[in-house]
Every structure is written in structure tokens, then in C-alpha cells.
Image 1: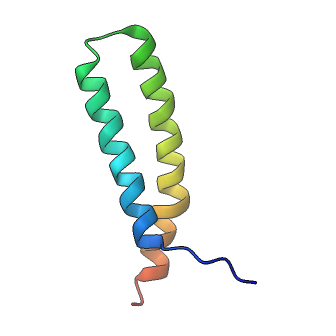
Image 2 (image 1 turned 30 degrees about the vertical axis):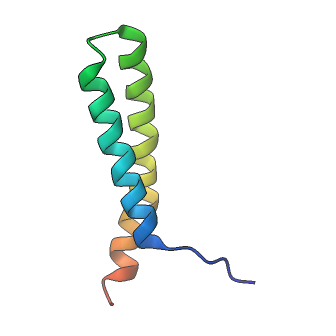
Length: 63
């Protein structure tokens, strides 16, 4: 059975995660632990961008 998923929704959620991480870093006031964790979170978000967003660009380009 083929899994069902909405690429556009996933791309939007990833972009929201990226924006939320940037906003949290901005309001963290330079707390080292928060900055380090946001950096790790941002790296994971970047991997999702490469996996999902770039694939969505290619797959949805024909639509």
C-alpha cells in the first residue's frame, strides 16, 4: 500500500519550524544552552529541508 502524504503541508511545517527556531534564538537573550540547542535543532531542520523541501521542488515542478 502506497503511503499518503501532503508534500506541500510538510514543506510549510518545515518552514514554520525554521522560523520558530530563529525567533526563539532571537528572544533567548544569549543563553548559551538555548543557543546550542537551537543550533542543533536548526541543523536537523536543514536536513529535513534537504530531504523534503528539495524533493518537493523537483516532484511538484511538473504540476
